[in-house]
Length: 103
Image 1 (cartoon, rainbow, N blue to C red):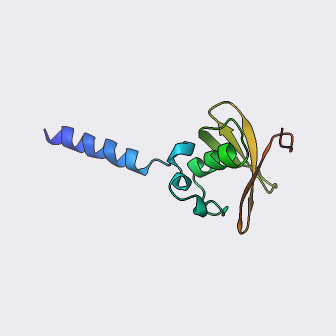
Image 2 (cartoon, rainbow, N blue to C red):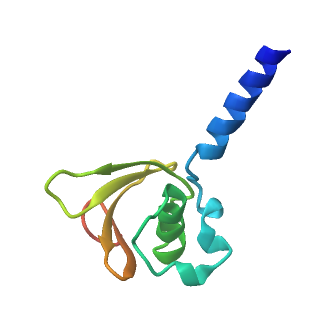
């Protein structure tokens, strides 16, 4: 019984620490006024901005990778879409397609 309890605790702890990834899990769903920053964004926050601010088909962000020597990172959405994310001081992130535009 002790082993089962330890396994359950480890599983629960890991789930509690997982970063939210879906737009519906972003804190902006509850308070849109927090959506005016590029600081400390979770994958869920990036998905929310991609979907709601820019209209991209990005319900969930599966991955984000920094691009060495560039001022942007690349996110991969569950739809397969890859987008550039430019974080800006005192503003929400600018999110563009990989070609640099909005189409």
